[in-house]
Length: 80
Ligand SMILES: [Zn+2]
Image (tube, rainbow, N blue to C red; front, top):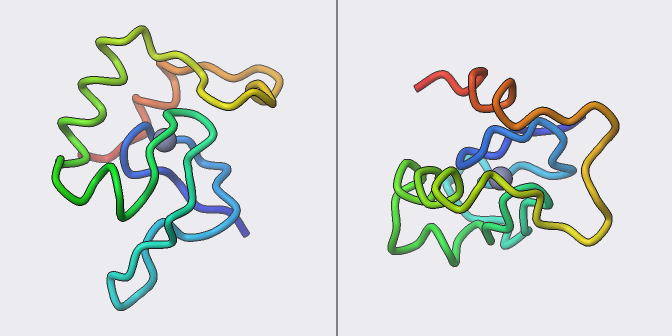
């Protein structure tokens, strides 16, 4: 099972960013580099997303994006 990042929409997170009680995982999204519960403690997901887009929608992790990764298609799937 995988989960989507609430900031960039990356659908391949290994754990839920927040559990059902609203507790953060403190995992880091490999796509946008946001640490859940830290970076988004004081800044909204929308604001963080706008910063990521303004910064060029770059893949964050050293491991590199999955084959066929498309930032724009990923963003289009965020339902907000
Ligand atoms: Zn992300």
